[in-house]
Image 1 (cartoon, one colour):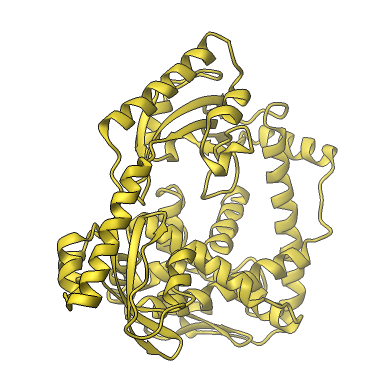
Image 2: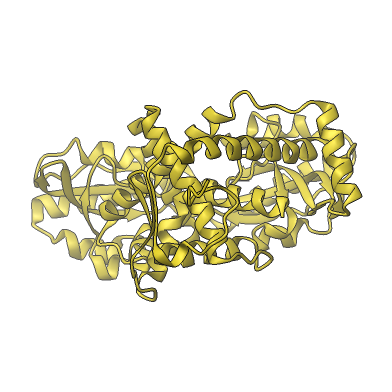
Length: 458
């Protein structure tokens, strides 16, 4: 049960920023039929319990089943932390919230393909409505995390405590099984359009701009005919209101906010290609704009040259003529990994390790058979901005699925031992804080048996 609790606490506290999406998914299916509990000034609705149960089961892939009473206690614990974060004057800056909101939107956008699809999927009115809800949830999540950190800031484990913890699990035959993990490094060579192709695109956009300004041509019609934007047939290039907080790349927003009403920009470059932008109207902090996007084309010959170049690099590596680190510095064009010897960071965890079975299926297929020190074949990749490139991956390290070993997995076992000790510290803190906090349980939950004294019966 201890392992279950650790996972529940982590799942809830670290994924609160995602809960609102689950809540919206269930909003039409679950009747909000009352308040389950009030903790300080925070409430848990009856329907929240079912929503969070679903999330725990989803994240554990059905391996964890939890009762309504157990789920309610977990939620009360979070609300207690959030309440006392306010009491203790824990501060959360706007920049912290904005940063978390941006990461959340990036995550959901990767999952659904676009911000518009996220907005539509979860029933928000627009991106601002989505960001407002995300900000609310992220603020509470940050308060909880900071209060947890404050309560447990002096908690640590000694090597002896780690050993005793491991032996205790071993004696009870409860040693965890760690999944297969890999560390990857990459070399990326981009297939860039030629200077002649870039000039052709700029000249074309310049001429389109001239035709609109001087000849009175329709911006919308020109966009439909010429723009490479995927939905241009439906939108005519219209992007709607853009604010400085809207999820557009920096270069695009800089141009938008430099224009006057009715003005069309000169051609400019972003990661997506070259644009011209028309500013229709200024509405307070928002700018209503349309754009035309043209992406420079990469020739088949250029693609072949890029692939051949990376194939030669791979052969040099296999023949031992160059080290991987040297090859990264000399050849790789990926700015995110070039200065870390090509180390490929998991964007969801921020760590260099990846659980093999949780990887993107396409990437899994390319590296699944590789052993430590082996190279993948050279393969083609394309970014969400349609940048074309060829990649080569090194299996830097690989550990297969195995039962925990104190020596090989010391860091992971240490983390589990520390998590358990922190959990015990939080439980002790909660025992004291429950007595001084206003708590009102709904009638349906007064019959629950809780670990902590939420009913204040003694």
